[in-house]
Length: 115
Length: 113
Image (cartoon, rainbow over all chains, first blue to last red; front, side):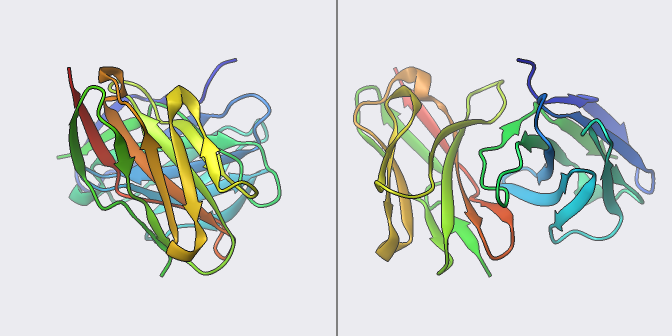
């Protein structure tokens, strides 16, 4: 079984630019979650998509957005990049069962560096 | 606000020592609790989970955790650690009020051979 795949693995951008990160969930999983893991911090919840809809959103500004496609893959978009956006962005997937209490399966992440 | 606290950011042990990593959550409602592990160079993976029933749950690689509702705790234990347990351990709680998985900051565990 193929795991969660994310692309690209590394990305370097400058302040003010925009970036798109991609995630393909495990086959059969309908929920996709995005997290930000900054150095020294735990995972901060960004977004949760299921069946193409945004189910929940973490405490991040609107320049963080995303979408989920009919094949359940997902994109995370970050506009007007700031230095503090430098982090590892993790995608996870799970089946949808009564409210997201299924264990999440993680990809390897995209390391975003802002210069 | 709901939160998950892991009190030890770094733990260093010798092989065969016993391990207990603390995890506390702040929420009075229903929670589902998880421990995840990230071995060096690998992605996060589930170690064990608690949804309901027996508060002592067993996971992979000899790990176990005990849910103590009165203490809002879900501590991870292993009676005898191995060098291969060197990893970062994350506690997480799914709280039904906000439909989010809230994560602790993680504990880096180093096992000296």
